[in-house]
Amino acid sequence: MSDEQKPAPGPAPTQDPAPGPAGKEARQQERRRVRWRALILHPDWHNDQTHIINVSESGACIVSPDSRAVGSPMRIVLFVPDLKQSGKVMPYMLSARVAYSVLSADGFQLGLQFHKPDSAAVAHIASAMRR
Image (cartoon, rainbow, N blue to C red; front, side):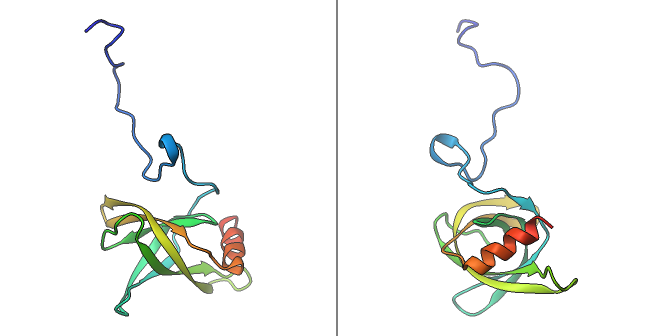
């Protein structure tokens, strides 16, 4: 192999867990790191308490005790800080689809894309992100 054909030394490139077409970033909105509480709602009526790692107006990354298949539907409740009353939260039930699932130290990080979120929820999430 000639010097021109050898790969450049250095770390291997990493791939974002939520790539779009041709490896490009699929996210459209700004993400913010948060530590908001959430519930994962299961069809059998049991719930998993969890938290949000980051959020945007169109999705979130949450911690889950279980992995989920990419594309599978989920229902979650986000507890978004109330902007009018300190220490209070506003719960929003959202439908989402799993964009990625990655094993982490405290479970699985699930990237979720919200499915037709309520406009009031989107506005509140956007406001709380900028706080």
